[in-house]
Length: 286
Image (cartoon, rainbow, N blue to C red):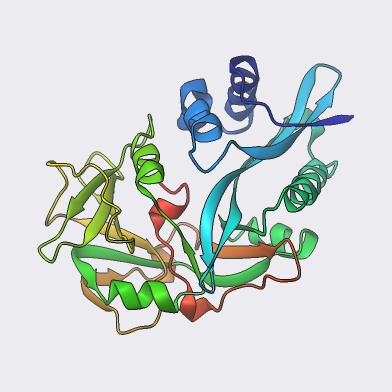
């Protein structure tokens, strides 16, 4: 078995798409090299970081993280969002994911990345925490309704111990997802919000953004001001009010999602669960 860093050329992306199609036939967005090119190569925060495993010319396994700029207790750092992993059925059970993840984190730490974070479901969380040393910070809040979240966004950002730093170029890139486009709109108070279509019935994912005043991506004229929506994420405990957004009971959630965090050096530690500022925009939910 040979191991090499991920590549973003067209042939490699087509090979990854084929592996995803073999492993995850329902995840049709991963079957498109155009989507993988957007995710792996066009991110203004940097190209994808990860490793592949080959048995001869056969791609046996693949793991990738996406770079991001994050604020950790007020300090801007280079972070990695743990995303895509797949092992060909012929090579499962050989510990390849753990090997690829370890290679990725070691290389990333040497390149100046300070932390890896991600969202894991109930089945995958134990593998990250027990085998790779991730901290399980908290389960993400899930709410459904017609309203929004009222809170002091400046205070939330200043009091958070973890949040992604969104700039105009990164927000523009995020909105240009070829499979899952994002709409940005301003509410009545001038606050920036993001929406993504979840299904054909009109349900949309909703995310309030806490950004600098000079961050203003292109505002969509089609973004909803009042429509059925779902919030998935975490807001710091600083007086947030959920207006007509009701908590989804655990028994109705397909699989509770957990925010996980791995420091890559001794200067970094996991954020407190009540100081996490995180929405669907910060990971690959929609």
